[in-house]
Length: 201
Image (cartoon, rainbow, N blue to C red; front, top):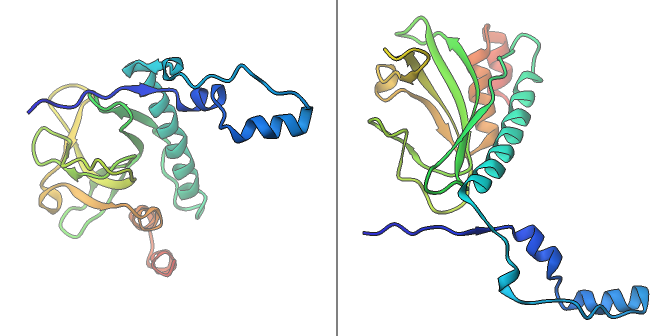
């Protein structure tokens, strides 16, 4: 089956260049002049390259990732995570992407020291069970937050999902930003008193 090839255009610039008809009357009432240069030709749409779309997506993801990180680190002075913001967009659909926010270590019942990474995406999906990072990517708009256990690979500087942890390496996955924040805070809390406060959020 042939995959649909997406075309993207700058919707904001197009709307500014082509205001709705009501704006003509508003302009007349405000200035007493009628602008006769309004064009409705769809040929004026400026189509964007996949690279341009990926760059715009990346900026939005990194801004959202930065805000998320600041909220987490602003909760309590003893829960502080390093800010490691970077993004990736999907090759065939550059309006979709994910953002790495932080990485840390936590203790789990059967694992005394688990390294994990926290991400957010601008789509919903399952975490893949092979080389593929995501599976079953939804075409509906949405956000997803998840943390995965990670381990170094033989290739220098590369990490992979540590599937020994919880059978698939997924520590949590949710589309609820409040629940995601609670989960990350729980991973960073060092004492039971603080965990109790977080649970009550």
